[in-house]
Every structure is written in structure tokens, then in C-alpha cells.
Length: 196
Image 1 (cartoon, rainbow, N blue to C red):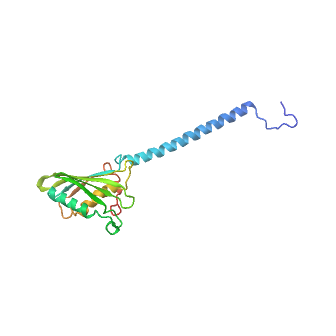
Image 2: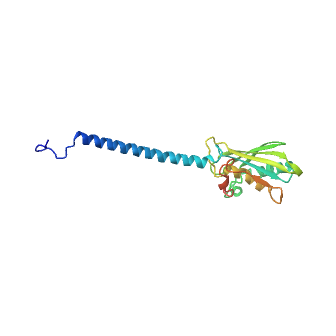
């Protein structure tokens, strides 16, 4: 049927209109599925990068020292007490300050470390077991008190490593050994203890 005078020559048939609707619907479905796939890929990549760490920001390190455990324990307690102060001179550019010694027993000491800038608090502990030849096996552990903490830039590792280094426990010790990994110590492989 030919258009009458005044009617537009661009009238579409019902078939053509239905074809356009179907075409647009398909394009929207394809676009939606594409956006969903990209979002799922991003979430998966994020999970894979975080899943190589503990589920909560924390760190476990096993050390061996060629000294009796009472000497190691005393050195760590003294270091916590030495770094108990809150002064910029003591902290410098790192976080070697704001430790609080809490408790001790013959096999364990506990304390906390507070970050100088944000004032996050981490629980710190060291467990001691005598080894052979007057050596001492120590397990250090630090965990964030912040319930939602997942990543920590290696802060929990540095909380306990800084105490060991500050107490000079590994110096001139042929039996000294440290063992940890990203799977038990959040962001261990990228930790910078001069900053954290």
C-alpha cells in the first residue's frame, strides 16, 4: 500500500519493528553478559591475589636461636619495654615504638604494637621451646585487632621482626634461622620493615 499524501515514506512494517526490538534486546543481553563477565574476572583476580595470604591480617614466623630460651625471652621483653615510648625521635620514619609488654610465663610473652600514624593495634606474642644444644625455638605471632583487616603491607611481620632485630638476637648466631611465607604471613614477601 502506497503512502498517501502527507504520510512519511519511512513507515515501518510490523515485521521491521519487531526485528529492531529483537535486535536491540539481543544487544542489551550481550552487553549485560559482557559487563558481568568483566566484573567476575576482576573479582576473581582480586580473590586470587588475596587468597595466597591468611584470611585475616596476621603473621607467624618460626625462629631458631643459638641461645637458651630465657636469654631470648629477656631480650625480647627488654626490647618491647625500650620501644614503649611515643616519640617521633624514637619512631623515626618507621614503627619501632609504641610496643606494650603485657604478660610472660616461662614459655610465652605477649604484648601489643600500635601504629604511630593511624593508631591501629596489633596483638604480638612469642612462644618459646628449648631446642637441642642450648638453642631456642621461637614462634612469633602478630595479628591485627581490627576485625576487617585483610592486607597490612607486611606490618604484622615487621611488628615481630623489628623486635628480634632490635634485640640483636640474630647477630653472630650460627644457629639463627627464620622461616615464614606469604601463606602464613600477610604480605611477607613485600614487607619493608624500615617503613613498617
